[in-house]
Image (cartoon, rainbow, N blue to C red; front, side, top):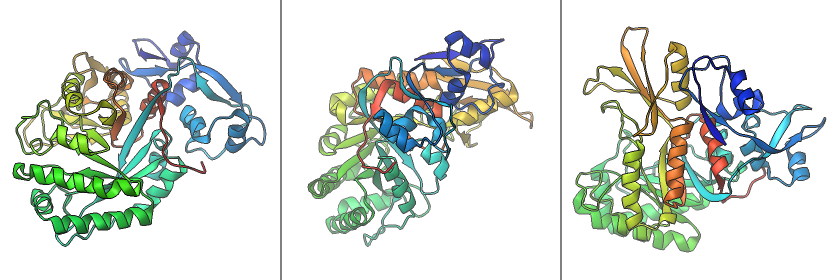
Amino acid sequence: MQIHVVQPGETFETIAAQYGVSPQFLQNYNQIPNPQQLVVGQSLLIVNPQTTYVVESNDTLEGIAAKTGFRMVELLQRNPQLINRPVLYAGETLVLSFDGQESVPLEVNGYAYPYVSPAVLRTSLPYLTYLTIFGYGFDLEGNLTVIDDEPLIALAQEYETAPMMLLSSVSQEGVFNSYLASRLMQDAALQETVLANVVSVMEEKGYAGLDIDFEYIPPEDREGYIAFVERAVELLNPLGYIVHVDLAPKTSASQAGLLYESHDYAALGAIANQVLVMTYEWGYTYGPPMAVAPLNQVRRVLEYAVTEISPQKIQMGIPNYAYDWILPYERGRAATSIGNMQAIETAVRYGTEILYDTTAETPYFYYTGEEGSAHVVWFEDARSIDAKLELLKELQLGGAGYWNVMRPFTQNWSLLIQKFSVVKRAGSAA
């Protein structure tokens, strides 16, 4: 596996010839809508098939799986062009394995809202251990909000992906509510009602575990939050459910701020079965332009995290989104959130060169929009994802958590399976 950065004068065909790979393979693994439209500085993932299968007339994916000994989900991982394509073509070549493909086991979690496009969700499900569906809230009587999660649960199970229920203190207005969180932490009876309702939903709908995502908890409720997570584990683990906790990106136990103070890495990490460290949002909607997940900052957080929490419990947070800022930056003016592949399309549209920050290990580019305003876009590509996955391997973390899988990012998933063997937790007919 290699990563090629497009140089002036290069074309899709010359790059494919340089590496001796099929242009079709190159297109499949990089999700390139138009191979004739590349921009300087764009990264391309180069993979070399080791074993292949040529489709015969009347072949089905089920039949090929039976012939080759590969599970259907493995065939989809290696041939992403098939995920949303209902037919096979006689004579086409499918990849069964790659040269240099590694088999390090990794749990991969992806977050999605119920309104995600099923076609987009399918592009990530073969690569996920867990699909965490955002999410359930609660009121002061302990009643849970109702969400339309059953279609996502069924779709996840088709791809051997375990659905995870998410409980948060997000209000009906869609923002984290510190008052609501505080009331829960201070009321043992309310906790029991909420958790009893959680168990009821999990049993009814077939969830595999609970993701607890409480943010902006008042500092005086720190111990109450720890006790709540401990009670959740005490109740759910004996029933066969795992408990997962989302943690703000801290670099020390004493880090100040409402986002950080009640997230006790040592205590919560000891209690929970898994944790997601949310290593993203340095560059954020209302902040100044910068990388969303600069590797130097991600490293600082995770190097602290492994001193407090068993590395195998930790999932590294990885962003599957980008931001487009208007320049000059003005406080209070929101950046536009876009997908990583949409960022490439923007660079192509405006014919601009993609640059790369070697400290943040993140690509970015400038352009001038139709309205005449200057813009800068920071996004993720094969190089930045590769750097993050290498850090994950270096620290021997147990997993990766993608916020979120609402947008396609085939290049990322193609890279992931070169480096890891995705652990699957759910049975499937797919």
